[in-house]
Amino acid sequence: MPELPEVETVKRSLVPHLENTVLSSVITRRKGLRIPFPEQFCQKLSGKKIINITRRGKYLLIYLEKDLVLIIHLGMSGHIRVLQKNIPVPSKHDHIDFVTQNGVTIRYNDPRRFGIVTLAKRETIGSHKLLRNIGPEPLSNSFNAVVLMKKLNGRNIAIKCALLDQKIVAGLGNIYVSESLFRSGISPKRLSKNISFKKAEKLVKMIRIVLTDAINAGGSTLNDHRRPDGKLGYFQYQFLVYGKNGELCGYCEKAKIQKIIQAGRSTFFCSNCQR
DNA sequence: CTATCCACCTGGCGGC
DNA sequence: TGCCGCCAGGTGGATA
Image (cartoon, rainbow, N blue to C red; front, top):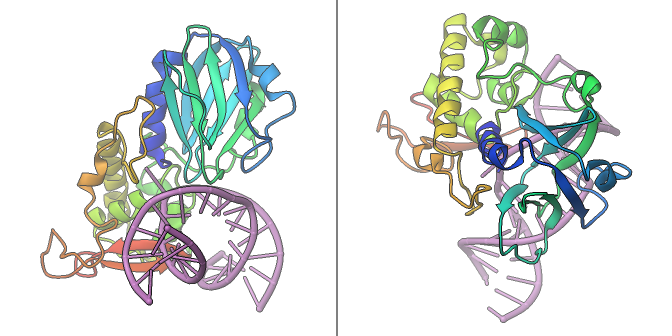
């Protein structure tokens, strides 16, 4: 469950359980995920109080005392559950448990193990390898048409690929790029350098709307993955193009939604509505 | 700079 | 039932 709205949903689920609570223990069941866990990972975290939780793009940042930051990325298949009372026996891909002093267990599960869980020092977080090149937060004022145009300027890559690039804008993934481009009337194949300022303005606006709506819907639920609180997100019911190849476009009702492959990933669009 | 292929992994699905 | 290929919400590296 890994684009910005899903990560934001996870963050919001964790805040009431974790902020101002102390980790009594941390249990890892393997050496690492996409990268190894740091040396002494569990020891460094146990006994530490969690100060606050933020999100940067698709990364969760959990700030603890002693200027320690726990960095979490969910990859393709990572999910987090909040467990209280009757905590089940860990199953196959439950790789990490964060146990708090008030009896809550935060369990990290990730079948494909493309996720990342690591530590950093607070003062180095701005220059951290994983975070330093990430573009503006799409829901903040640092993201606007002028900034976007500057990033797209002269680029010969398809706009779809540009928006997937976390250096251009943070947090968008395969679903929300297709949905944002559709709502903006921009073909995913259009070269970045050929996006007009007017279209960039529209795109910025639509990215904001799509992400905000998705967050309000609790994210998107694919393959029955659950939110940390066990609930399902339901933005998938608001998809207009993603996964709808072969269906008649619900907007123009003239063309069928097409699926194409760009940079090895599926893109969904309406060739009539998007130019 | 860009496109393409690949790697990292497991699981679910449809087809035979 | 089983095997097989293909697909999947991500990212980074090598190559041409």
